[in-house]
Length: 485
Ligand code: NAD
Image 1 (spheres, rainbow, N blue to C red):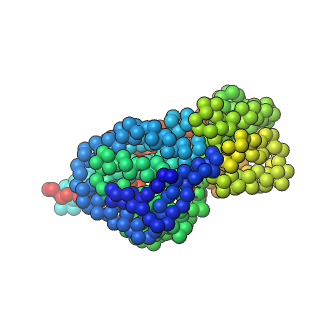
Image 2 (image 1 turned 30 degrees about the vertical axis):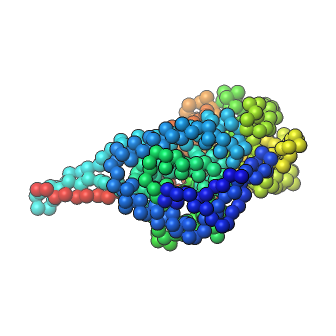
Image 3 (image 1 turned 30 degrees about the horizontal axis):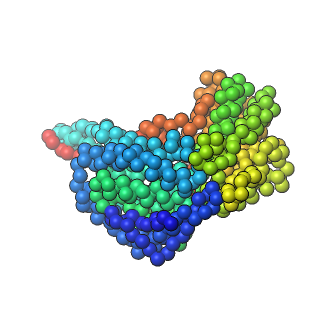
């Protein structure tokens, strides 16, 4: 059985407390995870502090950047190891992980190495009261030791989305991967050692959230800033922890994203786009669409077309090329999603398709499988229309007017993203300006240029990451004023 140890100060650290890591395809145990306690978390934070003031802090920018390129290259060299690890942890189709998760994991180091090399300098000359002059210039300094707390849906991709810029800016990190997906964060420790990243720069502590490594890390006063991706409720707990010592946070949280399809949309493209947004990664994408609004003239046709898409998604194991949808992450999450399926039924939904667990072969019946599901005819107050489910499901409602659908889309405490389908350019611009979210996609979904700002408004997040925007969180801006005349 695999052992997932903590990675502290460049060394592997085992502990006496363990928990099991399971494959969601059949619920089999694939590894034993060594849970970090307060002692190990403290060791990791101290190691990160020592590296910050030691070998990492004394590297020249060019040397740091070269190491980040080397990390990206080494991930690519060990591509299959990362792929195997991610697929075993999540059960997601291998084709998806090989096209999205692992390449982006490597790219996140390269892109932020490029960003940090090209940060524009800021300088202002000013007149002084005595008739002389002074020059102000800004220095970007690392924030220090960054706690990186991660979810399980895109484990390597989302972790490196934070570790990449953190290291590029000269910080050191202590990562707490999700308890569901410890593998790729652990493998990254091997990569760091292989390419010669100084010990203590990248540390991994395994564990759960409350009363475990997550809480011990975020409450540790040796941590200078916390970046977190996960549920909004967890974000509230972490913000409470961060308030002690007034430590800055960067949060990427939950969503209840709307997809809006106008009657003038390219119909087939809209169906394909909404199917992807609702069902890919078994619906476990923060940017996913669980609320769909379709203009009335094309409503029935759209529901029928999306039904066909959902029913064409064959559940299956990662290595089967015919697999359209993998399992949910765990039995626990399956129970949560099924409880929403039951609520929809109790609330009187019309179940267009799905609503339960698919029939699977005997050896897979213990997996956390779920049917892609579409509902109609629910009021906007229904639980499945208001709350984030994080499963392969959506409710579709008709609308008649542009202002009506904008109000419907905005009627949520979340504000992560929206996808709008229309061929009317003026309408596209108008709606993009009126929806209160961090990201608007027009006639597309999940297109990401990593130089752009990423993040949510309202209860979907605090701050923006991506390209130079990441510098706001991962650096402190220091002004130097030199009087010279
Ligand atoms: P989660 O909040 O349950 O857990 C995320 C991480 O936080 C895990 O590592 C967990 O161990 C840790 N944690 C839990 N409680 C903690 C506590 N009290 N203190 C410190 N750490 C704690 O989220 P999840 O179930 O892993 O992920 C799914 C959620 O993540 C969904 O809500 C989804 O929308 C969100 N998400 C958001 C984005 C985004 O970019 N906005 C991206 C991916 C996922």
